[in-house]
Image 1: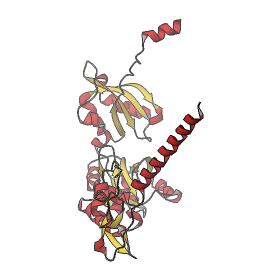
Image 2: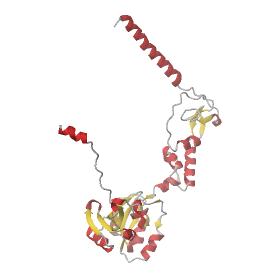
Image 3: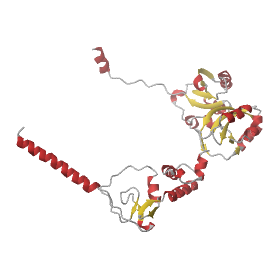
Image 4: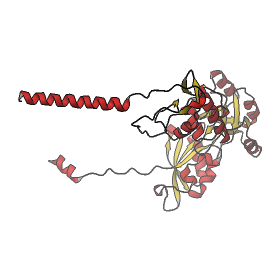
Length: 332
């Protein structure tokens, strides 16, 4: 290559680098922060100033403004984050923000939503105590519903026990914390069987009905409540949208019925027979049966104390499509 051409190319590269550096310096140099004298001098800088955080109200807008996709709760934070003047600088008053987010969360009956998300996103639990957060610790999450029970024994459960001859019953047993080994021994002494964890701090449990009060009187037990039939049925069955693959021509349906772990599969099969059902196979890993049963018997089956969960069988696998040319290539 001609030496003059090399020199010209070198000058061109250096020029591009210099121009790029100048443009970057011009557009991305930090905004000089103005000093504040009072809280009224301060505002939250996004989106008006394109600055994330509290700044002096006379601070020029940062350009270019790099757009980001905000989280759903971000506008709530931008609109409610108070700013204050501390030592001549504008800073976020996070504690006041957390107090407002806590109040808004409480006003929504501690429901899931924007105030809750904003409260957690700003790690407000490290700054203030919030009643909703305390309650959240005891929120029970079932596949059918979510609720925060009041401490005690459910009135519905008491009513159910008054109208049953069962010596044992499966219930939801909630604790103030996950029981330790010593506390589990106390439960065992009352012949309580824990059958599976339920968020938060709760278990499906099999209890002797005569020891109901004794169990609740244990210092670490918070609540004892009923398992409803709808808690045991998948939403597709509840909504009447069972897949075609699970429905037989004679109107029966193919289901997976899971039983609590303290129920033997021999007893489970006898329960299925009472509803004119047929057991097709066993799934020992989850203590379940694959059954064929009349569709109108599902809700009655869910009333069985031994049943934990009912869902339709999964759809048959879909064959992978293939290209005939691929086979031809292999044959070659």
